[in-house]
Image (cartoon, rainbow, N blue to C red; front, top):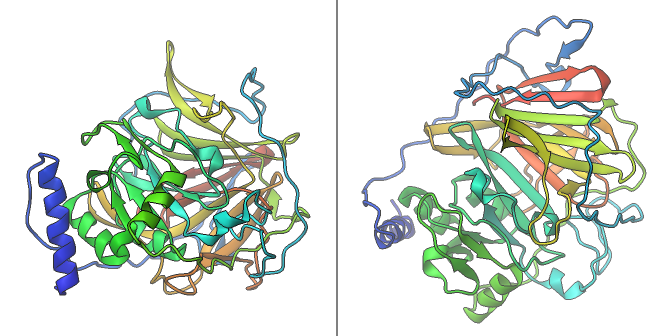
Length: 422
């Protein structure tokens, strides 16, 4: 183990001790890359087709999840609830050349920003809890340029929100870091804000990010305020305060090169209708995006407890009561590495080949691929022919699902993905 890795590991154990949680010594085991074997396509029926997406090497074996809940949800694409939340204003932009952006244009959204000086800093990337449900509604998601969503074990997910062109005064609840955060934060050259973490994870984050890894136990209030234990959802932060704190501590906050994403206002012809996307980790753990033809973006629905059990409801941002709405929903298929039931990594930086992507924008779904060109450059989204995959100018939600996830296209432009490892 290198000296720096040892320092990171010791640092992680010191954090855990400070939080009055039993310390453990050890080192990370050797990561074993699980190779995905091909499997036969299931025969489609008249009402739905099981997608192998052979063009981009996606396979669809049966899901390995075994939900422990018996609740059943029955959302449909024709839901018309009464909405009292304030809707955000829509924005437009001219097409942007691949990898080139004018001064004052956010390379993560393709849109001009109100304050161009915000683009002279590193992105602020914050871990946001989705479980337990008591932490909902989330704070600050509508202000994020990009949100990453991924599996964390026990059929649950967590978010990593990216703030660059816009700040949020309150973001959270802030929760623990995970192994994959080291890769994602370096791709976008960001500053990571997270809660407590497993000592081994803490060591990996420190080794990869150094002083750009800001843990709740090690920073004052502001920028991170609240009270937290392993299960609490009471810590929140501010992206502007995190930037100011980084500057005050002489953390390198120089302007990063974040070119690589491609935006185009003109809608894509697409490969199929994409009116609804449902990602199910279990029958009690569901993310559903439904296209709104008037707003021309996707609204987020999530399961929640009601007097009659579980039901889907529209999600809002506790900061402004706006609906959580994104212009692009990207599904990345990748290999997960499961060390324990709650300790996972995802092969992103070292992915050996082009990986499949589904892009939902303007009510259509388009097949594509993703790849990492450099450990410190944004993820590239491309067509199956290798050209740039055109996202709609605006905000992007990226969900990373396992290669074994089952993907179903139902009638009416509805898509269902049942998460599966690896």
